[in-house]
Image (cartoon, rainbow, N blue to C red; front, side, top):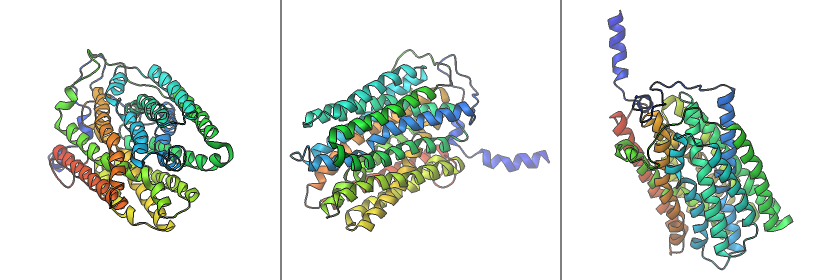
Length: 433
């Protein structure tokens, strides 16, 4: 009977699971257990989830609200500048959220969390208040693009590693919940902008946003904490991560996908306005999209724990590409609402699970380094993606060309995710990763 049981189990054990790689004992430091245990719940772990949720709200949440700022700047403060040049402000902010990931991920592995978080939070609030005083292009580029982006880049990437320290079996669900903080910010901030601008003007609108962000950052500072002991490393930059074919394939997937992912987030509102939809109504499309992304993030988190995060990300990424192809052909309010809803679900699912495969593609002690490397690579795509989309918009094809460009690169990203799956599981279909 034991022999039969062994025979029945053996085929399943031959399927390579990405999560199983994580527990391999390959410590570079002397403080990491070779068989770590994860709380996967409990008051302290869920307080970390609450804290990361709040930090996502204040950082990534303001970033995904950029479409509201883009539309306002194009028609008011920076109307003398091209759509592409204004998009550089948002692209710089987006890219800097991820670009320091290799450094901040390494710092997290070394046990440094509270000090970088506190300093970056102070910088973020300072730059938010300074943005209220901006009236020239280079002012906005410096304060909103570089200052806010860099501060968010110190805060956001380590939060992904924090969740991975506290959760394993329920990691995708935890990522999905914390990612909803981004969605909530993307709902609240555009609506606040829409109602506050006519009544209190631009300066006080941005100041009120800064006060809200301050509360969220304080909550995140008080509730987040590391769980693992510091890892002793000899250098801040490590090259071991680039030796992994699986990590390189997944980083390439993120790079190509993000060349197109932010096109709709950046230009949805202005594309609706150009096609005759009232600007006050068009502002709500960003909030609708971010509200729909909550559904995508939570659904993908639950499915990711069951089927594997990458297996869930691939179809949702293809869905995001299809919606991007359709976006330029929307001309009515119901059409734009449908685009916002379906793209929000697909984008939310993709971003909600984004760090989970990278966290599982190697040993636990270098998890922050892997996630940071992935974020740094894709930050380059985020930096250039929206300005390229803006330049294509100025060509005769207009938004149709933008949609074709963005959708095609998202499809390419999905193809590299499939290659990552094949490299890890040795199969195109089946296998949990």
